[in-house]
Image (tube, rainbow over all chains, first blue to last red; front, side, top):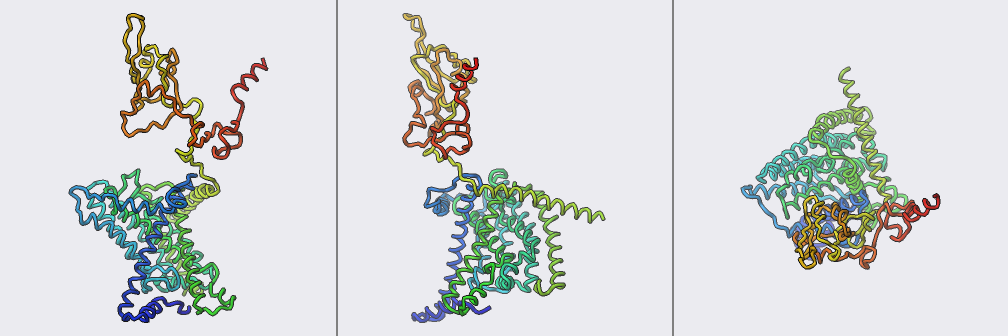
Length: 372
Length: 195
C-alpha cells in the first residue's frame, strides 16, 4: 500500500510554518488525536445509547424518546446532564478510594483500547506491532475495576455482583483471545493495520468472515459476554439480580460504568469489523475505483475522499454489529449463571481450540488462501 | 466412540440453539415493518370501554343513607354520616365520602345501591401528590369528569374491540367510525323481527 496522507507531518509543518518551535508542534500533535479520540468515542457511546432506546422502541412497537430534539437526538445529552448533576453518594463504611477508582478503572481500560483501533488507513493513534494483543491485555483490566466496585460497596449484593462480573469476564476472555489468535495466525502479525490490509486484496471475498466463520461466531458470543449485554448481562441485570456491582452507584460514578459499557459495545463492534469484516475496506477494492477512474492514488483530494469512505465503511460495519446486538437483546432470554459458564468453558473454549487447530492446519495446507 | 457420540450431541444442540435464535430474530426483524402503536398520553387517550369501572360518581339527593354500600363493600369503605330527623322521621344525610386511595373499584356499591345514587364514571387518572387528596367527599364525588371525546386538548382513540372490521390500530380511523359487528339495538331489532 502507498503511504497515504500523513496528518502528523502536515500538521507539524503547518504549525512550524506559523512560527512555533518543532517540539511544541509535536506536543500539540500528540494532544490533538487524543482529544479527538476521547470526544469521538464519547459521542459514539452516546449515539449507542440513543440507538439502544430507539431500536428497542421499534422492536416493541413504541416510539421511544421524541421530545428532546428532533427524533429525541438530544436525549443522551440530557441523560449525561442528569447523571452529572445527580448527587454521588458513598455508602457508610465503604472504602471511598476503591469505590471511586473502580468505575474510573473500567472506563479508562475501555478507552485505552481505542488507541490501536484503525478507523481508516492512517486514522489510528498508534500502530503498535502488538495491536490486538494490547486490546486483549488492556480490556482484561476491566474485571478488576468491577471487582473493586463490588467489593468496596459494603453490600453483599454488590460483592456477589462483582464476583459474577469477574467470573464472566474471565471465562469469556479466553474464547475471545482464541478467536483473535486464529485471525492473528492468518495475518502473521498482531497489528490491527496488518489485519485489515491482509483482508484488502479481493474486496468482500477476502474478508476474514469467510475464512473464519466459526471464529466469527465465537467472537460475537464472547464479545457480547464481555460487554455484559443480553443474553449475558448477569453482572448488571437491573431487575432480577439486584443490579450487581453497581447497586450502590449513582451520579457521575454510575455514568462512568454506563458510558464504559457502551464504549465497550462500540469497541466490540469495531473489533468485529476490523478482525472479520475488512475494517475500512469496501466490499470491492477501492484501488480499483481509482484505477478505473484514472485518478492518481496519491492525489490529495482523492486521499481525503478515500479516508472518508474508509471511516464511513468502518462505522457502518460497527453500527451494523451494534444493531444486531440490540435486536438480540429483545430476542433472546437471559441465560442462567451456570449455563453461562457452561457455554464459555465447555462449548466456546473447545471449539475455539479446534478452530485454532484447523486454522493452523489450513494455513499449512493452503498457504495462498490462509496467509501462509 | 462415546466421545464422538458426545461431540455429535453437542453439535446437534448447537445447531438447534442456532435455529431457535434464528426463529426469534426473524420475529424481531418482522417488527421493522410495523408501525408504533403508542398512545401518546396525555395528548391522546383511549376511550374507556363501555363497562369501565372508573372513579365513582355520587348523587347527594338520591341517597337515602341506607348504608347498603358500606355493607357490600369488601372493606366497609364508604363513610356515610347521617342523623335521624325526628320531625320527618327520616334519615338525613350530612356527608358521604369514599377514599379512592383504598377503593379497589369492584363496583359492588354501585351494583347494590337501591336508589342508583352511585354510578361508575370513566375517569381513571386520579394521581395526586398527597394520598389524602384521594379521599373524595360528597362534593368531589358529585363532579362529572370531562369525557375523553369532548376534551378539546385530547385526541380520543378507540380500543381494539371497538374498531371497524379489519382495522387493528386506533390511530388509523376517526373515533366515530362504526365498530365491527352489529350494535345492540340492531340485534334487538333483528330478534324482534324473527319473532
